[in-house]
Image 1 (cartoon, rainbow, N blue to C red):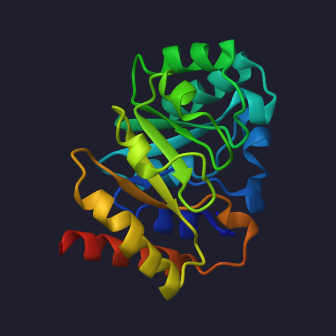
Image 2: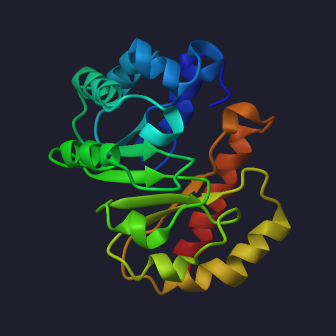
Length: 223
């Protein structure tokens, strides 16, 4: 997230239907650094303010981070033990995901014993191979990923999380209404909408991102 204070970040994280633990690279470095040093500035305030409902947390993937499996799992257990909120949804952040490794299988097996688990990947990945890992959620960018369609994803027992480009304008919204809305409206399972990744590195008005997401939600709810 692009915020420079924990309060701003938590305010924003709690304004969504599914709250999330924000990452603040401007304050504490990137996720890899936080993972190695086992730090997260948002933990205490989030614990104090989140009363109920699901909470999404994210851990680095072994390929993109080049971290040892033990380091990643230690970070997962650190977050889990420090969050009094137990209704966790754990996402593996793997922007670069060309292949499945033994580390992926080990991490997934351990986490799913206690919590639903998802994959976030804004890059290229093989859908069939990814599904075979048994994720509950699949988060990807609908604009940047052209290897498969939403209809392809909906053939599987997995709940998609659709990344929407933050700089969405009226033209983009029109494209969503024409190409994506009809598929979503015929769904038989949950579909989630999200901002795309990397907000911290872009000059983007986060209030506009939330406004656009709510606009899409309202349009879908009215149909």
